[in-house]
Length: 198
Image (cartoon, rainbow, N blue to C red; front, side):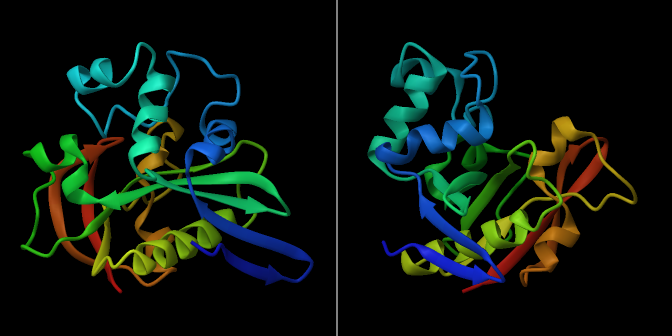
């Protein structure tokens, strides 16, 4: 895939799918110290049994998934990996397809965003909009008919441990619309279903 490259003033943004060659860039964003018990973006994607079958460690499990197909995209600012967006077909995400709390609203074969992370030290600097725009471009290039996200709508700042679900405002800025609600919650707030047709 050609990278999604945007020149903004003097900043160059690029977004690429996470292939095995870009695995370390993905890890630099979500787990820079490579701690095994820290997040590897698996808990909301795979069952515990699937993780064990994929590798002896969580990092190995995520690497194995990445060898099968990209599990999302990494956004770079001036060549530095600064953001991760987990995006792919909903049907490829075991935990999501089995969820009794986040159910499909129709039969459309949507892609789903289950996690967004901006690297520490790079937050509140425009990374999220660039990252989501790049993720949408990647999904469109792969033939996705639409992309969904399942964020919350906080009235103020939210607990950073649950910030990976995103907010309604961040998705609205790149053209998503609320199309439903879920029975899931994050930081005690209901999670919405937001969709962007491609």
